[in-house]
Amino acid sequence: DTEVTQTPKHLVMGMTNKKSLKCEQHMGHRAMYWYKQKAKKPPELMFVYSYEKLSINESVPSRFSPECPNSSLLNLHLHALQPEDSALYLCASVLNTEAFFGQGTRLTVV
Amino acid sequence: AQSVTQLGSHVSVSEGALVLLRCNYSSSVPPYLFWYVQYPNQGLQLLLKYTTGATLVKGINGFEAEFKKSETSFHLTKPSAHMSDAAEYFCAVSERGGSYIPTFGRGTSLIVHP
Image 1 (tube, each protein chain N blue to C red):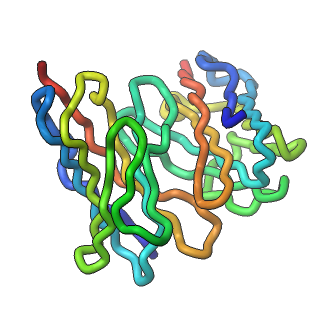
Image 2 (cartoon, each protein chain N blue to C red):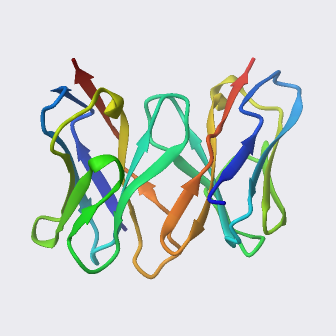
């Protein structure tokens, strides 16, 4: 199984809502990342988890809160987002120089 | 610090023609090098990577790339374009001996005309 599964595929939320994005992999990888991708732009790194511990936070606003409950699961909790946070959110798990990406969650903040 | 430059935000070719997408990197030590493809509203799929060994790397879907240290380049080629190759292509680097975090170029949109 070389899949990284992200749910939901699409999400529309209001600026006062609280929602969560989920990422799951069963490849035994111990490093998982969140990226944000705006239209026509490359992915930008947000967070890195290594062995379930947050190792990198690229100065992401606190309205994004990551969580890694176990080695297979990565969550991104969202609260009080702004319209400019609308983007494709990608999860990746990494092993031996190779990053495996999920299909992403298309987030729209209204 | 390492960085990657992709020349040309758009490349347009005819079906059956050669595809050439350019990528140059900047790093004090040659990094790991990758090419990813992204179809509309989808995630990224690894086409090929160079870590060590043979400098000509073959990937999926008939693509290949050559690592040229003297030119700090890792250009992506395919002898004959197919309509299904139309997508966004990202060159990426990650630090050798580091935590394998890909840093992406700005992307090149490949357009294939019938």
